[in-house]
Length: 471
Image (cartoon, rainbow, N blue to C red):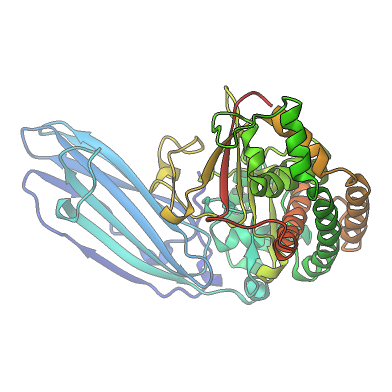
């Protein structure tokens, strides 16, 4: 359980609290405590609720606790719903879970108790028989103003997850990388040490931190603005070299393609959707997604191992601790591409976006029994990707052609990047930092190739490639 009391003495609280009954019900009644908003703080708070069924029928009750933050930068929300069945003329004891994320600004909470026909139905305002609400304000402590004054960028889509949608989660890796202790972090962020310890223990279980004796070590690459700016300069130089070599090799793309057809390595039908090699007739996803990420990206980031980003997870759960980073500063210091390589028991799937899509996750799924499991999510309408079938064996000859002569460029890029990171007292260059750097390289590379007229961006620049055989 991640509930810990906020240290009120360190933070001015502006509190309002309202309790109201939406309507009375002769058939069902509730006993819930009056919540003292002044005692609420970051974490999960549990309150008992007694549900009394005065009727001769089985009654279903839903208890909802909603928290909405109006933050200075981030505005996370938490919705926890618990359902109960109460037998005729019986009493059930349940609980209300009020989850307040580690965020600064105004935090509004509302508890609602619903008398429902079926707990699977949508909850309606007309079904509310009791409610309680309030507002708490958590001003930004002076010690973290400088950190929160800079935009902090995470890997694409990871910030949608409750692990990283709040202010505390964004500043924690920077404080840990500075060597600050739990008590020092609590003091500078204005919270209790038990909250810091609880969050760290939880994130250790998620693979984002490690315990080293009495101290903690972050597995998240925390990149400050000055370091990001210097390494971005190198990324621009690397992108120029990568783009030049790709442009050189691309000149013979069509000739190489035709030779593959002659050698019976590729279908001559460019519209053969079910052929895993026909995607080669669409050079944009081949160059941007498979060459730059699946091939060259795996070389730079994972030393040639498969770049299994989002493997075993999905875009809503977005659990990628081995590739996690946080970068302070402007958007210019970050790449704007999304690559995913995910496997299942039958095959695999690639996703590439030359822009980052917006997706819709099921409301409240983080607090349902399916938490941590793959969920049914959707793209917002304008972000639906173009779909292709792909066979990595069929496209491999073309990928090898495109990266011909690239080895010296990649080796030089790794050497210079590691040296530059070392100047910022990085004893170890984390994989997440390489991932961030390569996104900058890949984004700039595609801009160069587009400006040269080599590749034309079409549609919304989002592609899904479903594998036809095992990698």
